[in-house]
Length: 335
Image 1 (cartoon, helix red, strand yellow):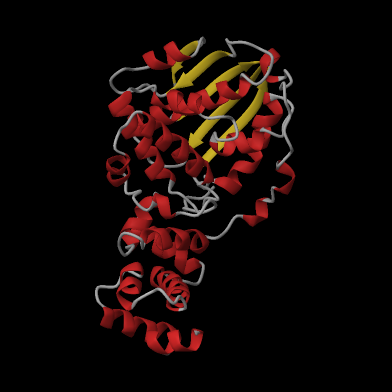
Image 2 (image 1 turned 135 degrees about the vertical axis):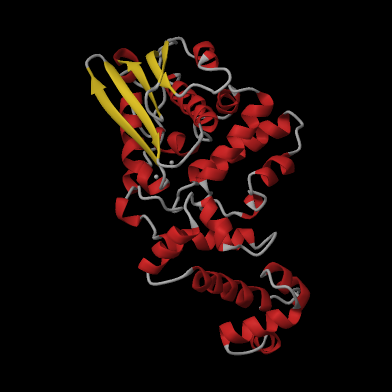
């Protein structure tokens, strides 16, 4: 799911697919979805575009909350409900591979394009493939444990697409849950399970599993991966601002928290890119204003609400500042 601590995530496509499967899982259990999304500041999720960034920290908090209400093995339940193609970034990249080893090596290489705060390391050790997951975020042990249960479950689901049957792993190192310890992982995976000495998760895949060919090899999507296409921070905050404007005006504190950084860090990094939070918010509002004003069915009050202004006069002043003219003049020119 990260390089430097920024909120660039094509990046949170991983989370976007995970959230889709997770929310389907919540709905199947007839649990109110809105309460969970509101609790982790993701009420704007329904307004995100398919390739928009989704804040990893918020997604982790959602997984933690689900684990509290439905058991610490909830990540495994969510994974088992989806197909490989639906299982986030790992599934999308892995489908064009021939073996679990090749799939995980591709995921390790492509992940920086997808997320700014997660790293997956793949290493051959004797007769095992060792896979390690690291999150470059300040995450509590309970949340980290929930993430690792889901991560191990994703890898297990991947291994199921070979002709092999469990057990796939010989050893797992995981962060213990603060209350239940490692009991849920011991029940879910037939392997030696030990506490991790670091805030990371590691698993040892038996070589005969890791090198076993998949029964079906899908179209290879990995050849379009270009590590140079990672967008700057400003390119990630704008889609979030756009989505957040559906329920309230985004603040720098809210966006910084979504990116797992302090307000000062976000201000400094945007300044290094030659911009600022207010400049980026103006760009978003200007684009939306031009788009909405050009629609025949959009009224001044609707545009005021969508752009997060407190009143119509505030909208008029802002549009004049951003475009040099008034909303009514823009509307006449667009017709």
